[in-house]
Length: 402
Image (cartoon, rainbow, N blue to C red; front, side, top):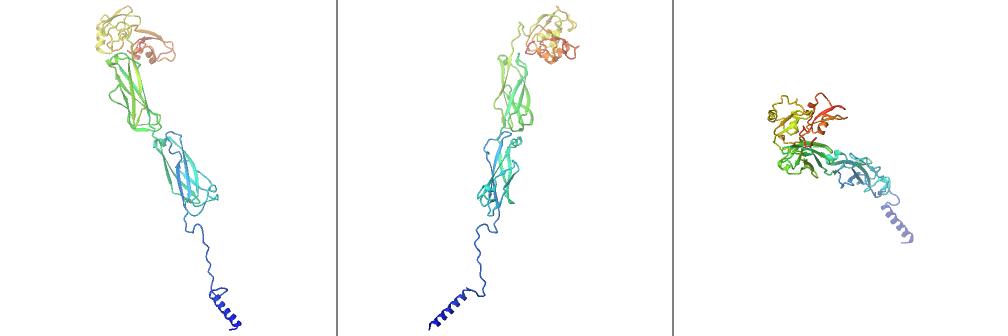
């Protein structure tokens, strides 16, 4: 084969190869291969997550005005980038403030996959929260039309149920067996939470049974108080002591008093004068005196019909007990029958009314029974400055002498 033939044969072979590979022309259509796409595919779903933390949630919350601080973390949990801003709504707190999305991650204006933004807010505790026992908030995050699931956060309020009790006797002294002392108790809720409804109870060591205070279903709000009372009768043992000291506590609704309250009633001094209870004495009438007041002066129970009759029978020469003359001598039997101090004379005094005086404070000043005081001054409706009053001294049979 000559050189020409060899080149021709080689050319034909090359042409056949090129034709079979569709290189350089032919009737086939070329196939284009798409480049690989790195990033979210068209089927990816946008999603975000929200987590909420009460930053100071371990604190003791028991006072109105305390502040709970909240922190929110919003994270892109889907592949698509989401254009900012991020917002959070919370049904309890102040409007949450969120960082801009260009301050996190790659600092662009999108919240990209796994990037997160932090928001903050606060809430101020109210009395209702303390009463309820907790603060419950519900929050949701949003960005680019995408919302998170709702997150509920509960912060417990500390139980702060505290009661105090005070006690006040109606007298500062006692003088005989059988004297009645009325104690008034005040129970107050000094905590930050309402207590009740419940039966509040006062326990006094001078009484054998507790004292129910107010209604059985009473609720005491913070700062509220209720009162109740108990009557104590002095005994022979009390007369052998220098004073009566009681110890009082209160309880109710799971609350108790931290410390007991006390009061002291002191035994009075025996009145001066050598008077023997149950004896009969004679008395020389002074100006302004009348028979019943003289008897009261010697602690005779003139309200007892038998004692009154005994008094009249001892003075048969007196036809009108209200009309006796100075220098007369009267007989007073069974002195001290009222079981109160025997003060003796003077039995009547006089007083000029001062500004602000009332029947009551005049009676207290002179240990005088108000009804007897008024009867002794029946022409005066109400004491006025300058009035001169006749005072039935010690007619109240009290422990504080005139």
